[in-house]
Image (cartoon, rainbow, N blue to C red; front, top):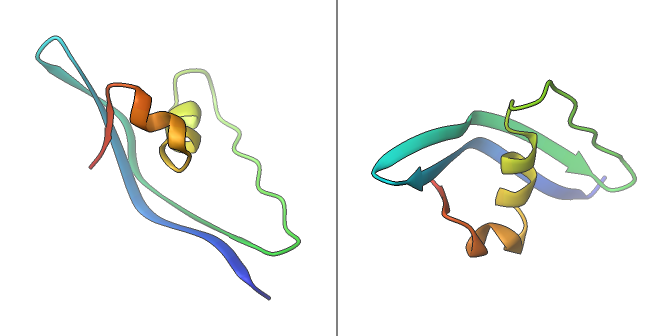
Length: 66
């Protein structure tokens, strides 16, 4: 199998008005060719921060991969 995506210990913080919001803390996952990955959690758990951090749109927000 071909490894397509490998994310290890991902942390994402959003900095606004002098404070930091810890949106994602040490998330790890991988995706092999032919597999499908679903991220399911409650509202406010960091799903969007996780997915956007591995795609270009994070560069247009106040988020920073730490």
